Image (cartoon, rainbow over all chains, first blue to last red):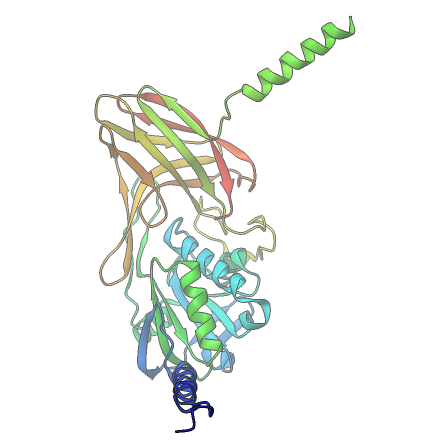
Amino acid sequence: MNSRRPNFRVPLFILAALVVIAAGALVYERIKTPTYYGSVISPPKAMPGFTLQSANGPVSLDSFRGKYVLVYFGYTSCPDICPITLATLTEALAKLGTKEAEEFQVIFISVDYKRDTPQISDAFAKKFNSNFIGLSGTENQINLVTQEYGIYYKLNPPDPATGFYSVDHTALVQVLNPQGELILIWPFGMQPDQETSDLAALVSR
Amino acid sequence: MKSRILIFALIVSVLTACAPSANSSTSQNGIQIEQARIVVPGSVTPMSGMNMNSNSTPMAGMNMGTPSLAGYLVIKNTGSADDQLLSASADFAGMVMLHKSVVDSNNVATMQEVQSIDIPVGQTVTLQPGGFHIMFMNLKTTPQVGSKITLTLVFQKAGTISVQADVTSE
């Protein structure tokens, strides 16, 4: 009835509603699962350890626990697919920032047990980034690890004129978490920006 | 006298500036070639840092550590007839082949030699990672990143065309 007294109720109600909405949005942002460009493996799949040959002797996957491991199978005589995959990884990690990039270990495994010694495999990997590790193995070791990691490979018959042979192989990058579980797969064709986004999402978890 | 020298210098510099950039685009007999590049991965020269362990001698004829390199380019058929790229060559490689990479729906990557690459009239064909590429093998030397290499291409209709390819690290 008293026309002088201002009515606070409506604006107060609107303000309260806005605060609730803002708070809800913030909580949602924190708890929602990030979107990945790669294929998410859910639940994470425990991957068996493997022993392969490095330039400095035998190496087992366990020795990389505590870091994310990015595994790629290929061969060093590959002029096209393998270089572009490793170059993309190099660029993706460079865009991430030095400190964050330290949480990731790239491992290149050559399935070409006939041509690629551990030294050749490692030198190939290190051409892209001195922190990358290149491994190789005996025929038995390669058969075992490719089977464990679901990787198809085939050494093709050599060209009679040149002696050169190509190697068919599954061209994926598999991302393992610091506990050695497979959590993400990047198919061939992922762009550096997309990989950087996925890597950033992983370290922010 | 001075003004003559000045004019001469001016003419020379204008002519030099106008000289066609050998790299940007090469057009000949209805075929236009652009963005020719040869990829030598890494900024470190491949032969450095290699462990020349005699126990790890690779197959004879294979250049240890850098057995093959890829070349990419864009080919446009601006002529009036279909054409085909038949072959390529460069001084630094003893053997050069045309290849096509394929990654199938199971993510399996394969590579096959092709005898020629069709360049239909009016079409642009791009040799790029994951697809058609030129494969250089039996490397006599490794091209230096940042330099240019003469790449000689042979077309069925357009004949032999030489381009300057950039040597890049990716």
